[in-house]
Image (cartoon, rainbow, N blue to C red; front, side):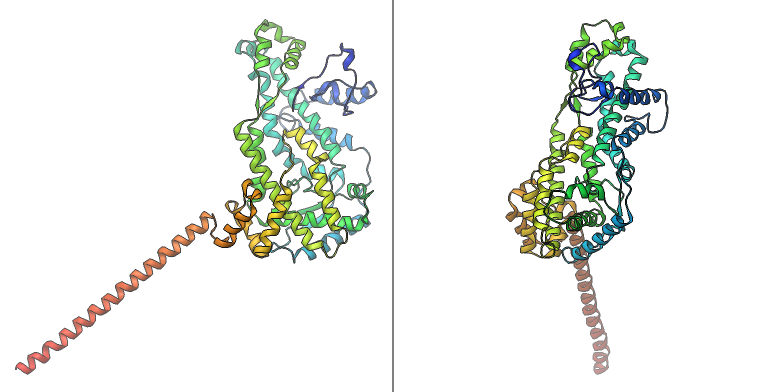
Length: 475
């Protein structure tokens, strides 16, 4: 996220290389520092695509991110790839069926995927782009206004149309970075939930056979066992996200909350612009110099810290639950399940390609630090209660453990097992219990009133009968 700008000037001989091999065109993107001359043809093509959208209105190219450009560049980055063969599709279907069958005995949550599909990189891009839009727009909206918000009012007025052009070019810069990152990522992700987020459509489990084949190389386990293991992880994620109605929205909303809290430090820009003649801002090179002097470093706010802690805890709980359930379902059936689980855990902890891409695009590292602690908590809760007690904690967000509970699972388990998950910190359950108590008290009161009325009636009847008898004997 740092050093967002237009890259180095062509006059700087020290910045004629592309050190990270990204091929960013003309410095468009985050932290770009020029281009490799060998990529000149590709750069000119991409630059032309950017300029072609300058006057466009409406569509995905006129928002804070130029998603049309992003998809074009992503598909260029993918290069050539083989379509999914019938054999690969059949193998994925069989693996998913077997995984679902084994998962049935490890969790109370039923199958959440209505279908299991095999995706090519293009399929992954087409089916996840809507979620990427939701995750990237909050950051892009912050960046799209930074060109004007950091400059004095007089400078903004003098710049006029130039500032509008820079805002649109900022959207194209983000689209360029997004497209190249997603293009690379599409060839490396294994499933639709590879980074813990539900990127694909609800109810659709997806595996990418080409990436899985590459991932299996060098592992000691047969590729078919790897496929079953990954299918089980995908199916477990789908069960959780499909049958816990609040979970998908809570995860994505927390990411959005974090992204919208990003603040930029424009003090350097203000200092650089203070001594300039506002009329000079009509010169793009002057504006570029200001942008380069004032690195747009995101500032972490207290609200972001809280959102990040909630997100890390929630993702750790999801990952820990999936890890525990998959291990219980496959542990005795798949010889390499334990080793594969550790491989996946290390892949997440070391910040694989998915992690790095997300950190670049959203400014947020999706690296749950307490996955082991979360998995231990779920295992201890299962031992202290049962499968229903463990999975019942997902019934309401207020029932979930927080970050401190991951450090002290015994106290959390004592509260859950001792108090019962049906009412533990659950305001809905507490309200229902209170209403039931009030109804019972009202029924008891009504019954008491009826008994008293019956007693009074009996007394009146007795008095009425005695009256005539006494009257008769007197008579």
